Amino acid sequence: MGFDPMKTLYDLIEVDEAIEVFTRILSKVNLQAESVRIDEALGRIAASDVKADFDFPDQDRSAVDGYAVVAEDTYYATQYNPVELRLVEERHDNSCIGKGEAFEVFTGNPIPCGANAVVMKEDVVRDKDRILVLKPVPVGGNISRKGEDYAKDSVLVPKGTVLNPFHIAIIASNGLRTVKVYEKLRVGIISTGNEIVSPGIARKQGEYYDSTGTLISQLLVQDGFYRVNYYGILPDDEEVLSEALEEAVLENDIVITLGGTGVSGSDVVIDAAEKKGEVVFRGVKMRPGRPTSSSLLNGKPILHLSGYPVAAWTGYEVIFRRAVAKAFNLVNYNRRMAFAKLSRRLPNQVGYQTYVRVQLKTVENELIAEPYMLRGSGVLSSLVFSQGYVEIPSNIEGYEKGEIIKVFLF
Image 1 (tube, rainbow, N blue to C red):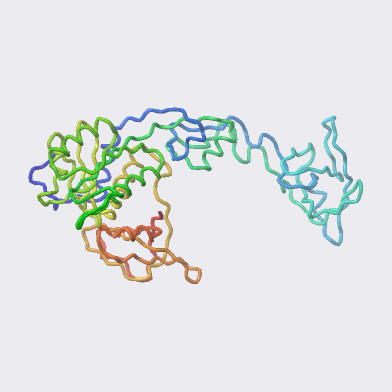
Image 2 (image 1 turned 90 degrees about the vertical axis):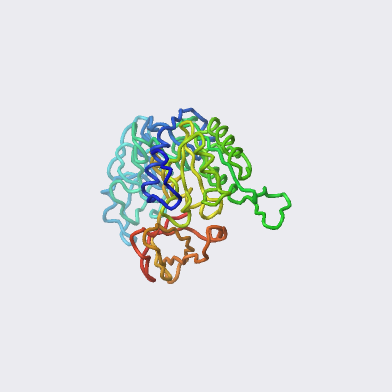
């Protein structure tokens, strides 16, 4: 989409359109696969299906300490009318146990031939070479079947999975020391603003520490499959920003700028991007995060976010994360959700998709969502003290108190 000279910040596009447009741009990023050790794979994206090399378990085995038996022998066993079974010793001739017999097993032991259940040790009284069964056990009871966890050639981890500790553990159970993943996405971050200073430096009246740069950098680090390159804080100077963007797109797959996305004379980030590139969209119908924009420079995608932390987070969360999930076919990157009752009315301006941070609490066994009502795109504490957010569609005037709403969990 080329740049329309008549387009201004107020020619906003819908959230879904912004996601689709940025997804198409991101889809052109070509990620190569590499093999890494499983202890270095946390947060990485599986580049291919990981399939099981064998059945696991590879044979029927006991799930408890107890006695392998023929289940039918125990069907009428009670505490007052126990069933007596003869305890047999380990056999080396591969002969099977028969009716009226039992064989002692421990958790993880293979099930001997002829047995089809295991009675728990707690449900048995042992008397030398016999046991008294006090409780019936069904066929298959207390047995982990061959292939119960996974069968040979089954997919353990699908391609596009963002690997968590559970995925890595099941890969290890398959005997693999390495896994094929995509190389990390290189993301360059540029903070802008004459009034922004780095943490640790004494600030003057009217200056602000770069919390937004820290926020977006750490969100990327937390997700695990990005390599973050931070270019520091640049002044509101079109020439300086234009040169910095050219350098950043050469060294990264994606560039994110923070600040300078408004329409005042000092907001020159979009102008700098347009100088040698093209603006893809400028402004999105969402609150907060309305100034969120995108451009292309030398074929590389640039996402322009607000300098205010909450607005920047919204653009990152709603546009960037969702577009990344779609562009790279990630199977488990979307936020988990919960349903909660709204504690108060939540209004919305029709025409805008609104994102409200909420605190979650349980009241009388019911999950309650308490909206964080402080206004402003820079209220960072609303993220600190919230457990999720609510998305209010642009075609409704809001939600009423007591409505059951969907909450995206952090």
